Length: 195
Figure 1 (cartoon, rainbow, N blue to C red):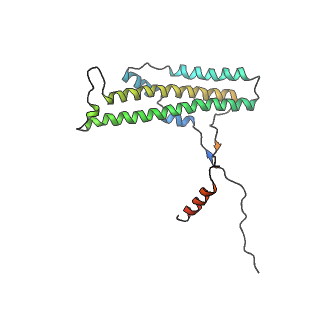
Figure 2: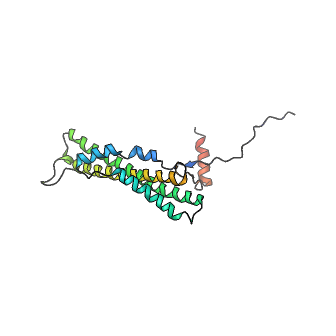
């Protein structure tokens, strides 16, 4: 009797990771300094001191780390700053996503000008702006806010690199698969039969 060759089974379990928000993701959704300046000039908004905001937040994180250095080990400091910087980056990313949606809504409302039945964009009563104008102004405000949070996050990331000595990366936590009940696993197995 001959034995068939079996391939060795790998007992290692692959755990997928939940990707964190990176500074690059923030830069993709938040306006940069040049665009923010154009927005400020076009809508009559205050011009932000981007460098001042960035420098202030960099100093803030560095001074925080300096105040905590006697009470935290290097690893504890790294973990703490990881969380602090992650909060800045996450906040900026959320603001950038909100800004992107506001710009889309402003573009959609403004594009309705080409539509013959454009009641929603007719001028409002005397002294009031049209709906499209309000959406454009709201998007401009959100752009300034997203930019301010972007440069604050950039300052925090720069401070992390100075204090810890390595480039900041978002924490990636394992995906929680505890919700995969026996019923769900059975449903997945059954559905895979249709593939």
